[in-house]
Structures are given as C-alpha cells and as structure tokens.
Amino acid sequence: KRKIKAKQKPKTSNMSFISSALSRISFSNLNSQDSAEAPPPDSDFVHVPPPLLPPAAPTSTTVPSVTLSLSQKLSSIGKSSGQSTNEYVATLTAASMPEEKSRAPIDVVVAVDTSGSMSTASKLDLCKSTILLLLKELKAGDRFALVNFGDEANVVCEMGEVGRDRKATAESAINRLRTQGCTNLSGGLTLGLQQLQSVSEPAAVRSLMLLTDGHANRGVSEPDGIVDLLKGMLSGGNSKNISVNTFGYGADHQADLLRRISEASDPSGSYYFVEAKDDVSSAFGDCLGGLLSVAAQNIRLIVEGPKGATVEVAHSKATKQSAEKWTVDLGDIFAEEVKDIVISVSGLDSRSLGDSAEVTVSLSYVDVLRSRPHTEPPQTITTSLPPGSTVSDRNTYVVLQHLRVSVVAALKSSAASAQARDVARARAVIDEALLFLTEATSGLELSPADRQVVETYKQDMEDVLPTLRTYTDYERRGSKLMSLKGQSHSMQRCNASTETEFNPYRGSSKLAYAMKMKSASK
Image (cartoon, rainbow, N blue to C red; front, top):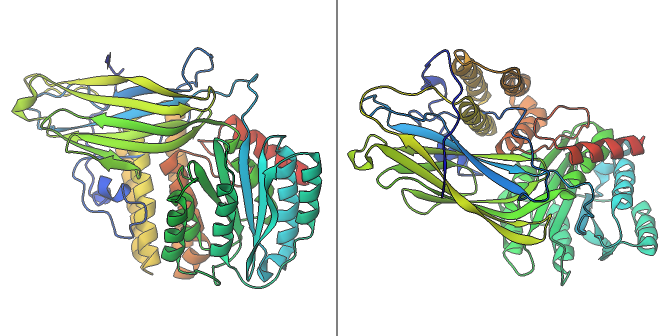
C-alpha cells in the first residue's frame, strides 16, 4: 500500500461548516437517485463544487489511463478537540486521448421522435440534418441504426457496419422521415435497445441517443413504468456497457423522466436540454465527442475505513458493504475527465483507533485506450489523532468538493418541492443554499480558479430562481434547468447543448465535436 500525505493549503479562518441552512442535506439523499423526499438532517458533513483547473490529465503512454489520488479535509485532529468526523476525496483523473491513437469502433443507435409536434419550427428537419452530420463522423467499423417513434416505433435503418454504400442507404432513409401521430417513447426506447443487443460481437462503447419534444402518450406512458422497462431490458443478455443519452427538445418534454432514463443505464448517460431549436447539432456533437473519447469502463472503487468508525460515501452508485466498507461502481470516464468521490468517516474520537486512522481506496477498471483490464495498487491516507485539542488547517480542494455535493442536493430537494407544487418551499431551498454557499466560503483563502468555481455554482442556482415563481414556470423551464445542472455537477460531466456555453467539465473532444457539428449545420 502506498501511504499518502495530503498537502494542506493554509487558511485564514477556521469557520465551521455546520449550517442550519442546509442541515437537511445528507449522504442518504445523494445515494438515492430517484427519491422525491426532502433530505434528512446531516449534522456536520458539508459538500459542493470542483475547481475549474483539476490535476493535469496524464498523457504518457507509460502511465495508466486513469490515476487515483486521495486527499483529506483535516490531516490532524486532536483527540480532545470535539471533532469526530473527517472528510476525504478520492480523485480519478483520466488521461488525454493520444493523438496517434486510432480510436476503437463504436455502436450507436439514434431513436428520434417523429410525432406530429416535431413538424413545428422545422424541428424534424433540423434533427434529420443533425443525424446526417453524425453519420458523416462515423468511420468504417462503427455500427449505426436509426429508429423513429410516433404512434408506433419503427426501425428505419437496421444495425450494421458503416461503409460508403451503407451510409448512402442510411442517408436516404433519414431524408424520408416524416411526422405523424403521438409519442410512443417506450416503443422507441425498447426498439433502439434491441438494435444494440442484436450485435453478437458488440463494440466496447455502445450508446442509444434518444430525442423527443413531448410527453410519452402511447405505449407505456407512466415514468416509473418506462424506467422499469429500461432496467428490465438492460438486465438481460448482451446488454453490457450500453449507455442511454437523452435529448429533450423545447419546453414541453418530461425532463425528470429523460434524466431518470439516462441515469438508469449502465454506464449512465447524460440528459440534454435543447432549448433553442438549432442547438440540436451541438448537443449531439457534445454527446458524440464523449462517446469517442471513453478512456475507461467498468470502474470500481473499494473504500475501507478504520475498524470501529463509520464510513459514508456520497455517490448514487455507492453500495454499503459494512459500517467501514463501500464499493462504488462508476461506469465509464471520458478522456480528461476528473471524478471526485466524497467520503465521510465519523467516530474518529473512539479510543480503539489509537493515534491515527487510515482510509484505503482500491481502483480497478477496463482500460479502453489499451484494451485491457487494469488494477491500481491500493492507496492509503492517514489522519493523525494526537492528544490535545489542536486541529489542522482545512484542505481547500476537499471543502470545494463537499460544496459541489451540497449544491446537487439542494437542486434535488428544491425540485422535489416544486414537483409537489410547493414552489415557495422550492425557492426557499435555493435561497438557503445560496446563503450557505456565501457563508461557507467567506473565510476561505481561494485561488482565482477556486473563486471562479464558487461563482459558477452560485450562478447556476441563481439561474433557477426565476423559474420558481409559479408551478407553470417550473414545469416549462425550471424542471429542465434543475435536471440538467444537477446531473452535470453530480456526474462531473458536461451535458451542455450549446457549444458556447461554459461548462467546467467539458473536455477537448466534447468541445471540438460540439463546435464542428454546429458549424457544419449552418
């Protein structure tokens, strides 16, 4: 095991992070993806955003595609200090894509809504041109299929390898798409998945890209039923590594349903809110840029705390094995992405722990860039527990990660209140979160990049407030923004539909394809 001593950044204040404003936000709420209940109290664990300038992604071919590092909020806690909890962050940093690397083939299915509403504002025409642009970006060896859904779902272009003749056939099929009927979203979803599952020797990266502008009103129409249908299909054979990326077009789609669909796949996909009709091309480009830059899959972390202490992990894919041990199945990571897993260990004042406490994290994954499994040596970080009441300075990076998680929890809690038509409470949750963010950072010594991160998350929450004046405002726009921003910060992954929109998680591949496809669509 490698012992890690986290570098501590000097602070000018020892401000407490215990705040009644966000005391209802907790780990248990974050570990439940679809819970609509307000989070229960959490006494002294604080969460939120990542710095805009994470550790530089490794580029050498001699280093792994994903590296692990550990940090802790407090490196030393006096036994009589009254502080019994410490916070830790396990950081995964993905390498940049080697320029000389010839990417592996991918399997892509597009399921597009062709219901009557897609005829307005040239929406279907824009989608058709975008699918044609996506098809041009696929190379020989990639596989492509197209499904449409209106009253019924149909296979427009069967799954098969992309070649010159097949591209011509697919282009003709795309140009023949016409609008009709209602929205059989469940039919489009299942038919698209069946196309991916029909491949006997699938690619390592497989994805369904589903776009709709309305509400499911044919086939299975209840959100819970659609999500259960998706999970059932993905539990069957030949379903490994299928992500579902969803695109909500305009103001009338069911944002919460599309977010849940994207998060129910394994690995998780992303939800995109395509607010402006001509942003469908950049949204598809951002998504494609991610699929073409997958660095690792089947990522698993094992987190083990000291015997006698209690460990909690703030992640929707975390599973508790015992009081001291958790596993976290992260799915995939794109090139240049950084993932931060927030860990809390309580009970550090126990006499059984002696003069130190250790947290050990193990990492394993499938290295897509090198086409082989990889296991990192376990890493251990040690917290000193000396006699006395002295507590070390706080680590800024850990504090900011905890703040990121609290912003996610606030958006989730606010959305739950708004869905229950209590928009006053939903507004109050965001107001309290903004106040908490100000108080939690007022005494911290922040770098310019740290201040920009705090400002970014503040702005994201302020953007939501105007959509919480009435339930109608929330339903038409607020539900979309809250699903979009909450997912982006939770997954630390860009899901921006506009290529010019700032997103702290957007890597170079996502940006390049978003810009390329938007430019080509004009």
